[in-house]
Amino acid sequence: MKKPFCTRCLLEELDDETIYETVQRTIRSISEEKRTGETEYRARLMGCKECEKLVQGMCRVCGCFVEVRAAYRKKNCPDVHPKW
Ligand code: SF4
Figure 1 (cartoon, rainbow, N blue to C red):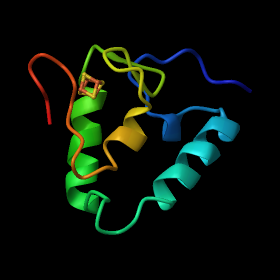
Figure 2 (tube, protein in one colour):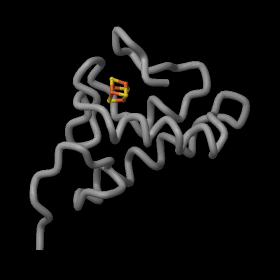
Figure 3 (cartoon, rainbow, N blue to C red):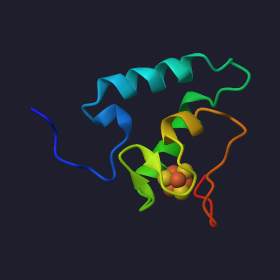
Figure 4 (cartoon, rainbow, N blue to C red):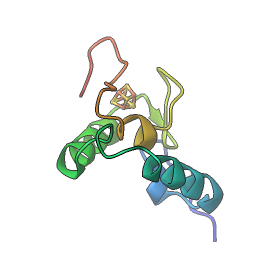
């Protein structure tokens, strides 16, 4: 049974396994030196989960899947007042 529409969900919480797997594969392909550490990564995602710009795993400011954007160490939150 499909879950209801959730604006503050990450992809890992949604039912779309195709997109989720694609995103996870992309994250796994990021080299270790470019990837955000796990503690920082989780803190970034928690910031996104509390953000009104998150819609179904995607940031309305930049159009990125936040789970990918947050995985790049040098990327930041693109909002006017960045949350991470
Ligand atoms: S504006 Fe920043 S905190 Fe909000 S969803 Fe986008 S990346 Fe995440």
